[in-house]
Length: 346
Image (cartoon, rainbow, N blue to C red; front, side, top):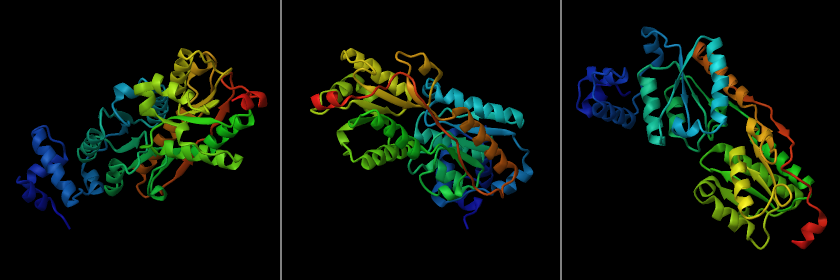
């Protein structure tokens, strides 16, 4: 079993220095902290957090980890709303929140280690689920209380998480478009690094397969391309020999983006293209046209994730739970029936 002395020897520092790094002491330089933490990870050394917590007073604080920097995320209405749910439950339970500011996977990982080892927080909520996420692996190995907003890509039976049934709801919205007569349906805006995209893409494919329609790779457009070259991507998509007549967009922001690019091509929604998306932002009711969107219960996702991380903090023996938040398709004006005559003309 690796000891604190082994870490100190490998890092070339005193055992007391390793202890101060674990406590995130301001007396230790950032360079030394990084070197010691790297050695700890290489050797697989993790402090006995439960034993240390007996000696350290609870912080009554929950760490909130976003997929990248708060500056960019807070421009997406999903995050203020999920944070509202977190804040509500945290306030009710007399916990504070500590918001991460990491702008890359590495910075997020380092910050989580600092939170855990420095006992800055009693538990952590991950506001995303990334494929093969090393931060989640670290928290699981460290036996530190945490919950996830999203389905973990691995070991979901061992991790408490709060999510929607993204496969089922995306199958439902794709079937909704199929029911309106659309056969050529594109999937727009997913990032395959995240489990939510994988699940939604699976639901989309299932609906197409059950309807007897082919899955077309050229109909799948990923987030990075829409954000970087949205106008060109939209033009390419609509210039295909058999262009789509409807879009399933990953979220409302992506739908707004696509609508603006379609307008630049003199195409209108829903007359030329139908669009359905996710998250049901408040603005979607007032957009032009009002957007058909799935209400994913964002506030409840945050509230429930906080409830169950507090349960893990206060009862470390609590069994892992899977909490599924119900969703609801809100029909507005961005989708219209596709007539048989129009399909034949195309």
